[in-house]
Length: 257
Ligand code: PLP
Image 1 (cartoon, rainbow, N blue to C red):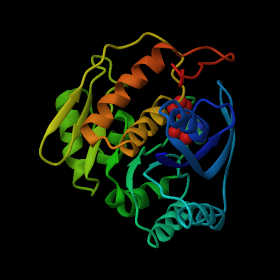
Image 2 (cartoon, helix red, strand yellow; image 1 turned 90 degrees about the horizontal axis):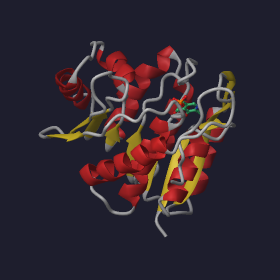
Image 3 (cartoon, protein in one colour; image 1 turned 90 degrees about the vertical axis):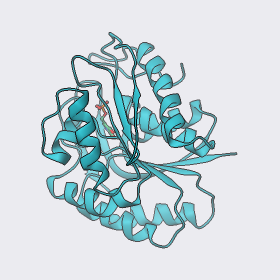
């Protein structure tokens, strides 16, 4: 049985975060495991509370898994603060790591900050060099490169800048741009473009979490990065098309489509 580990925040409403990641792993037939970094109270309308866990609690979860179980890929999501990032990086030093897919989560669709300001610098400096792939959306790529992005050419420029920060591959996701649903992957030499037609469904909660988890699951199953992203894009396109309403705000994607 292939395995995948998500290191991320809990979304009690089940669409994003750890819960969305585990559903995505299950949908891919991969055995999912989780290290929880923060607990959020949220629903389809708002994030009302966030509690970051103590760094020791996060390190102990990582140790419990790696001391016993073979991990075939890691997805990293919400990291919340600098102390949490430092704990994870220090614990990682004791283990042989599989490929890591990092979604640099900064803000929820409902507008809540999921990463404190001082943590961005440590993600870039300490985490990016450990990663096989980072998957920023347009807003995150703009923040990380300090440059506005409005078209595919800007996305390529952002990919090049982000690649210099140490990840082996960079996927800039174009979903927030009006004129394209194109995502751009850069491996330091070549660009790969993933075009999909834009789907008109407001129920997209958990899209970024599911995409990065699907990429990690495909890597666990032996796919290379280019194919893992292509297959994950096909999955997420269907999951968005199947997104459904469960509360008064925008609902989740359908992980099991
Ligand atoms: N809540 C948690 C715990 C998350 O990890 C994420 C994204 O990674 C979100 C919320 C944001 O999801 P959305 O963009 O669908 O609001």
